[in-house]
Amino acid sequence: MSQRVRVRFAPSPTGPLHIGGVRTALFNYLFAKKHGGDFILRIEDTDQNRYVEGAEQYIVDALKWCGLAFDEGPGQKGNFGPYRQSERNLLYKQYAEELIANGKAYYAFDTAEKLDFHRKDHEAKGKTFIYNWHNRLKLDNSLSLMPEDVQKRLDAGEDYVVRFLTPPDEKLHLKDIVRGNIEIDTNVLDDKVLFKSDGMPTYHLANIVDDHLMEITHVIRGEEWLPSLALHQQLYDAFGWNAPEFAHLPLIMKPVGKGKLSKRDGEKMGFPVFPLSWNESIGYKEEGYFSEAVVNFLALLGWNPGTEQEIFSLEELVETFSLQRVNKSGARFDPDKTKWYNQQYLQTKTNAELAKLYADILHEKSIAVDEKPEDYLENVVGLIKERAVFVADFWDLSDYFFVPPTSYNEKAVKKQWKEGTPEILNRLVSVLEGISDFSSVNVETIVKDWIGQEELSFGKVMPPLRLVIVGDMKGPHLFDIMAMIGKADSITRIQKAISALA
Ligand code: GLU
View 1: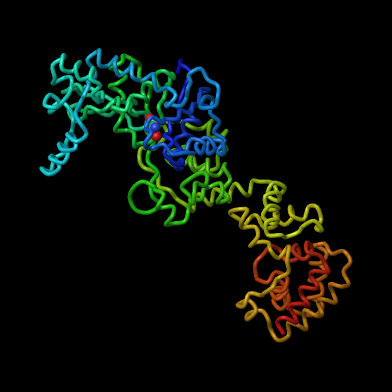
View 2: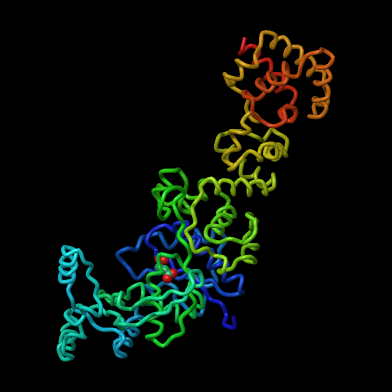
């Protein structure tokens, strides 16, 4: 590749970015960075009717959270700005006119009502109305009207759109990096509107003019844009411009059944489909996902490294990524796998990092930890993180490190609490009282020796002991827990349970 690689992510601010959109941004970013090129954010906001307040900021925030810094874009310096199409508004008309002047496009005056009539009329006959070679001369446009008539209408300020004049009887040979060669017969295409009566370009015109002016070398976008490729290629040819290379990414599919992953799938099955929260829809961030986990699982939706490796940092992804390894077929979304990724990333965090996050949760619950040793939280986290998927799981896994149990698992009580249990535990209290070094190893040695000397079985002592310390049969090594909560608390918990379960 001799030219500097330049790619763009070009969302329309019509709502929050779906994770499919984040994946498109990610693949663009990876490709740009892999080739030492530029990653550009362009906001395609020419359709004022679909504009949603706050959506652009959401897009910027989402990219930032994922660590996908753009080199050029709104609010960022760059030599190809402005990067919002609404601010480039005046630019597009001249290109529409250039095409008309060169016989590649035409004015069409058909009213919305007329077109609607044709559409309905066709429908009633079981056909689809397509505005193209077979009927354009019967419709109201600069191909069917006399030139003077056209001029008169334009001078009178009549509403018009500009349509692309699709040449009939041609075979287009399109190239897509993911899908290979595609052949299209131009006779099946319609004469798409390039410029609207409201004085704004359509997506198609603005998109290819900007890709050209911004010197985009590779267009990497979702498969839903593949049907536009024929028109886009023809527009490049009509202008006499070199087209960029295209790569259309496979759809992200529902976890079960057929079709594209939708917001409703997330609502039904309880997983986020947005990176950040948007109104009442919770995002991956707010659900407690690490951004690295999200980036990692998105990368593997539709791309495969060709190895068994599943965990990739962003840097590793940049190194390994290639469009040649993007799959043709849709990528099924697996909510369980996203959780697995988060669990993996949680394990790679230091106890200090996790303790900081956990401290916020404890603060919200008004659990004071000031009187605990400085490394208490870190030690707790170190003991339980293996079982956690999210930091929010920590509390259920470790509440007993902060507050004594207020109830005891009923099933466990039935099974473990025998007639002789209170008496054994009372004797154990005396043993514990005599221990001055209350470290896990020391308590374990002394308690185990005592069990041996008294000829008690482990089963008679250890399960009830766990039950009274933790309130349940869960948790890490019991002597670690006892050492952490300390001698006084351990003894109090045993005594309290003896009277509570009497
Ligand atoms: N504005 C289009 C979108 O919202 C961009 C498609 C493209 O990348 O060409 O996805």
